[in-house]
Image 1 (cartoon, one colour):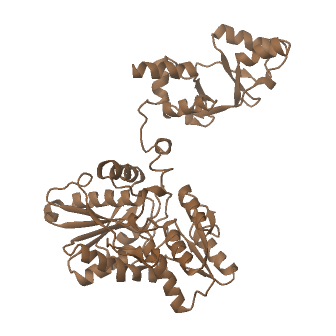
Image 2: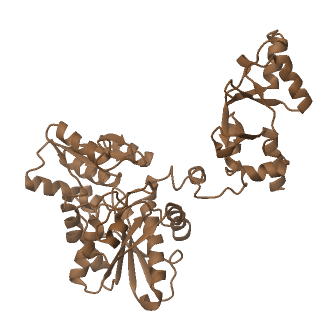
Image 3: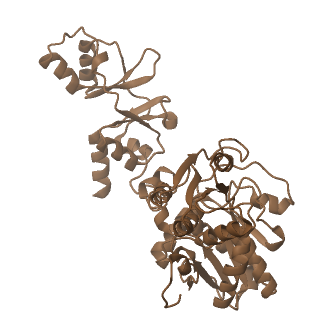
Length: 465
């Protein structure tokens, strides 16, 4: 990074630092470095292509003064385009899949952009996909251009002419370049430049499980159907025109869980606050390096870290989200552990019908020694619970008769959990005023048990003592 003054924020893009990894990638004799693209003004490597794509469109006459830029984006290209558009005076419409973080959506709107959110789990040619919606918006908006980072070859040209030379200046002894593959712009442009200017450099792409890219790379063109995955910014369900498989020497798959855990490790072990795709790139790099054996000793490897962790505070850096998604385990154990501690045998539970008489329910509670009772509707589905407090209020304050129905006294603030759910989840439900009901499958299946406040307090108190 240079010490100088700039005429505008775009001039500050690039020249991001290269930093050695010391704890999360430790291989004997192998030097592993990362390029910190999250230190660009807009927080990602996509800042580089924002200005470049707009300048290219202007030169081609495709974008007129005061026009509107439409783009399908996972968020970061939107930021890059929004920064450049703010300086040049263009309007922006961005279309994102609904799996993208709330931070990305809010930040794009902060630029004054119109943001449209579309379903994730649809085919690329589905009219609801973010590709299709973007094309339609560009067609329907006067003086608008669909930038199309996936098939716009100016994307990879930008990295060929800027990012590639920058990397070779910073790291003239580079031996391996590793990056996630999404639109293909970074890995194709940088890969081609490095191969042309430093023969022998290897280029390795990282692809998420669920994406079709690695299968196409291996099989020479046979596309397997894509599956849904959680990580953002890399992987595809089609092959963009920016791809050039001849530039890639190898490709490695990574999963969601290991990616998110590595993303967090980068922060706590290296002090690097990066996003999901950065964690994926490091996991993929580690897997590939380990598979090469001793041949990489003395080699220098560079991994691209595409964006900042501040885009994912509500996801990968949120303990509750990680727990809910099953990417981390609760230190408090599971509901099954709780039931075992309480000696509650699944299935031993008394229920009342929604039309049961108040007097009968009082009798059931008294005999069972319980203070609340699940209530089923006429079809046998659990509708809610009846509490002793509600019965007392009805009998003594509201002067209801013992032969009246409990139907109007039922509390429907219930939430189903499964035996595999965490006790933390149950605790959170209780603090929200809900009653956790344990059921098979966790979604109104066969009712197994009811968990009370004192159950959780006894369990947690014993564990912590």
